[in-house]
Image (cartoon, rainbow, N blue to C red):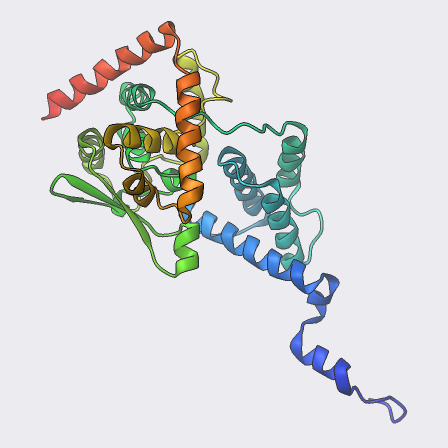
Length: 313
C-alpha cells in the first residue's frame, strides 16, 4: 500500500469482511434465491443421475432434464430462470448453458396453464403391461411403484433397485434426495402395499445390482412413455408421467375414503394444499375418461400384465 493511500475503515471494512467481491454483483436477496435454487438443482442431479456434472456440456444436458421435470411437475417458471441464473453466477460465466436457456425460451412460448390429468388405474397398470411387452420389467415396476406410492416424476427416475426394501405385504421405497427431505434434514420414504407393484418389483429385481435404476435413464423413460401413450392412442403431451402421482392419490382416496391417510402417504406439507390437489384431480378425472378404443387397448395390456404375473407365481 502506498504511503498516500487511505486505509479502509468503518462500514467499507465490515462489508469486505462479510462478503466476497463476486457476490456484490447481485443483491443479497437475489444471492439467497440463487443459493436455494442451485441447491435444489444439485439435489435433483444426485437423485436422478447419481452424480454431479463433470463438464459444461454435461451440466447443460442436466439442466435441460431439470427444466423438463419442472415443466411436467408444474413447478413455477421462476424457479427455472433463477436456477440457470444462479448456476451462471456461481460459475462466473455467461451463456454457458445454451440448450437449457433454449428450453426455457420454448417454455415461454408454450406455457400450458393446465395440470397433467391424473392417470386412471387402468391406464397406469396397462402401461406397466406395455413395459413387460417391451421386455422392460424395471420400467414396469417403476410405473407401478410410482402410481401406488404417489411418486413424483423425479423420484421415479431416481429410484434404484437398492432403494426398495421388501417386507411382509409391503415395499418400502427410500427417497434420499427429495425437496422436503432436504428441508427437514431427514430422508423420506413411502410404503407401497399394492400386490401388483410388489410382484413387478420382485420380477424386475432378479439379478439386478442395487445401484441400477428402474427407469434406466431419464431420457429413455420419457421416450418410452411417449411411445406408450401413442400406443394407447393418447396424446403424450397431455398424459404425462406426473399424472401417475395425481392418479395414484385420487385412486387411493376413492378406494379408502380417508383424506388424511392419503395426504400422509403423499407427503404433502400442507393439508389445505393437498385437499385442493386431490379434489381438483378427482374433478379432472371425471372429465377426462378414456374413450372406448383406448380402453380396449389398455385392457389388452392389462391382461398381459396379469398373465405374466400369474405365470411367475
